[in-house]
Length: 312
Image (cartoon, rainbow, N blue to C red; front, side, top):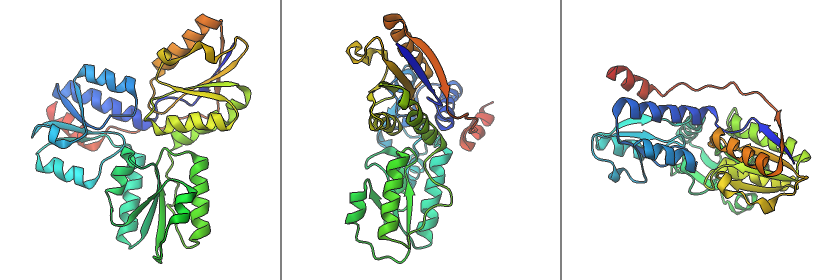
């Protein structure tokens, strides 16, 4: 068996920033630290932080007044921020800067009288937060068929996208939007994040050499799901798994070439565990193939730097 380790893979700058923020918050302010939604969409990361004293909540009513509350990497709506203030919560904002960029674009377009078509997945935490910036001005679409059903007559129309979409899917929807609404405008720079694009590019290129793909990531991770879908579109049998416990040896032949990658919220430790399992079972050889270098770094959020400085 031959294993191809795709690179880039795993944690992106936004995930690294959110994880470091939560770790430091627990260290500085003690247990519990409340987190609105999962810090990132990954089972291993969430379970590790639960053991460290993080409490993940779906409603701010679960958070005691005056407690420390961390907003996850996916961002929150203005309404959540308002409720946090009402409850005197000490908010720490770990929203990914690339998600914040989309929020600001939504605010700007709405302020100038645009109807905004948001391309994304209904119910995703990021989409909920973005739509909350201008709920009266945003319409959600998930597919070209959704675009065909739109009945919009506004003279000012703009589109935005969720940051973790399939690049190909988003481009198809954008093309349909431009076909139906030639006057539609988009952001100066595309919204799909660099890490999502790079991981998809690596799968697209390296899947040509493989006949099986393992994508490390949780089922609720949008960017991880897109990687698995992209491998399937390339003609590869793909499996989205949380870790080695999910691997079924019947998926493989001893002569297979196995592509292994990881979504932007999947820890490298689970990648290493899966590689070792296949090495031990099949005597697999491992090759690392890098498609693109990543040197992006996001600093800790302003709110956290201020709170940490005051405490020290």
